[in-house]
Length: 384
Image (tube, rainbow, N blue to C red; front, side, top):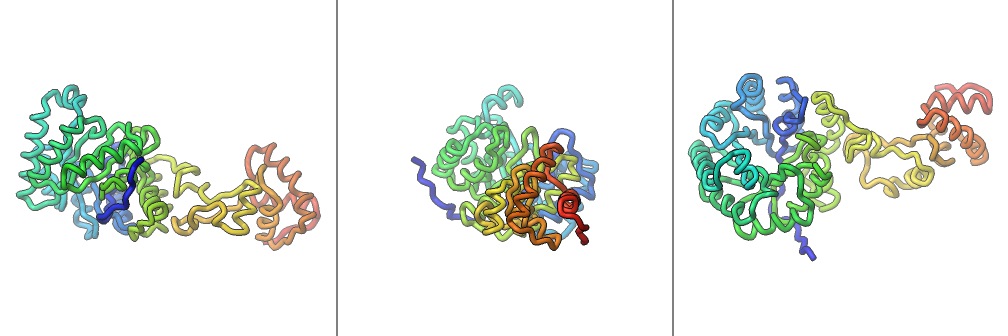
């Protein structure tokens, strides 16, 4: 049995929408969009923004410079390989922190890097020592950490700490972790190395957020996220899921302006050209939409019966949807919005007709359609 203990350190959110999020196949942010997203993230309360990859040059470097010049409260990070030239380009942008990333799994070392474990540690140390002399905050990213040999990963983390790194980014690069394994792995690193740990989890098996939170419970104190879980393949742990999970499940309120979540999600969805699904956790439009008769009746009596938190907390509104599964309570509530007080008998009369319409059209009814049904059945015209 796992001995779950609350974190003893403050938790910090590192948003990588502008780096890992933009690495989503087919996604490109315009420079103005990158700056706007950075400002949104800063206003939300994000502690550190990974703004991009300066060594790419061109528009990428230009947008990072603009973000660094925007006067944000958040720390601004540039992503780098363990190459001095990469770090110099980051410094030229004006970032106050750098991520130095290198693979630590044998499959990556052998087939991607085509080198040795010794080479990995040697080049990581050189890059960290150079960055340390420049006085910036340093995250050492262990790419594919979740498939790395634990003894080597601990050796890598110790070498990073001794070279002057501030934290280790534990990357579940191909999203193969599950929460119990995550907890045990992070616990083992924490027991052997006194270095801050960031969870960077991918969603290939749908467990990115769960794994991130499991890492926190094991002692990690940084969480890498993206808005709406944008990211390569199945994406990353979602900013809004992580923050609300910490707040409501672990009673750890980070002080974020969560009421902005829906607005920011819509902007990133539009800028990335990626759908914001109605069923998306926390910010999807269906989060507070109720059609089922039992659910609708319960929510009308007390929202807590079928809602984990209030819709206003994330910038949404409650919706009572009239459709195939609706009951008389929802019907009376909806018609009350038009100034009509249905009796229970009237609601029972209208309900079969309304359900028949929804089945034939394979969707809930719009407000105007509900008005027309009432007018056809009882006569008269409903005025706004």
